[in-house]
Image 1 (cartoon, rainbow, N blue to C red):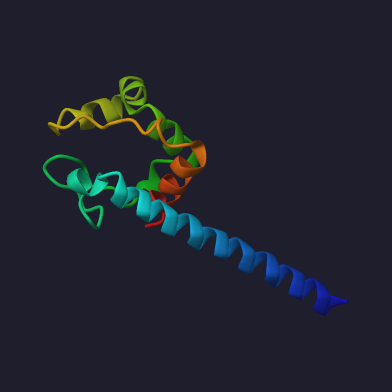
Image 2 (cartoon, rainbow, N blue to C red):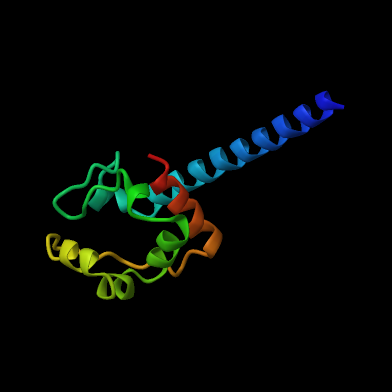
Length: 114
């Protein structure tokens, strides 16, 4: 009986990891295809046009990031930390409302992955 439970647990973990890898890969593709690299760099290190996007998990949840990606301007206006940060860069963060929620979620998963 315990062997069945362990196998089921391992299968659940593998399914979760496969989904996570899929979301990370899909998010990385969206990051590249949407032109995020131009402002945030190919390794998310930041450039003169946009801040670094590394270590975001210390300040963001996935749900918050998905909401932000939908309408960055509204989020920035309501968050003093982001409002101040936005003054350092000449390019305004575009919205990703054209992406469905699943794709914004994949992008958020990728951005929070490291």
